[in-house]
Amino acid sequence: EVQLVESGGGLVSTGGSLRLSCAASGFTLDRVTIGWFRQVPGKEREAVSCIDMTDGTTYYKDTVKGRFTIYRDSAKNTVYLQMFSLKPEDTAIYYCAAGYDIVIVPTRAAVEPLEFDYWGQGTQVTVSS
Picture 1: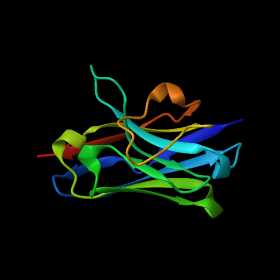
Picture 2: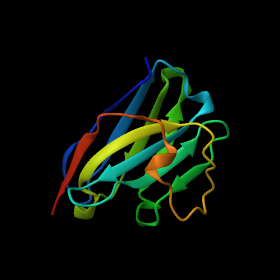
Picture 3: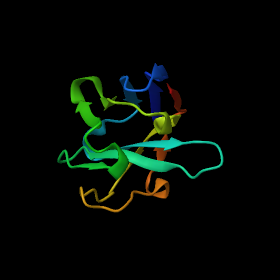
Picture 4: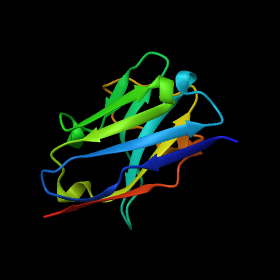
């Protein structure tokens, strides 16, 4: 059974840091793209960062560039999202997702949720002002 499990969310103050983890089971990560998405009530789910596990190419939403870093630990079959300098507008439920044959280039305008096949249950990130 394919499963993605997120962890690491929590409550932090503005300027704080969190590291989210996405642990995969039931498949290996080496041939997929992993995406981190976030969603707040009443808004569409948006891609925050993605990594193509075949070659390490990454994508970041403009508003998180320089603050968030996505990276992988293949030995643990886990992808991380390190978040620094958090802002109240980063508050959301964060989801990780996996998909095949997704073209990731750093200059993509956006990455769409429909491109991904498997989703985790989400982890809440709250940044207080």
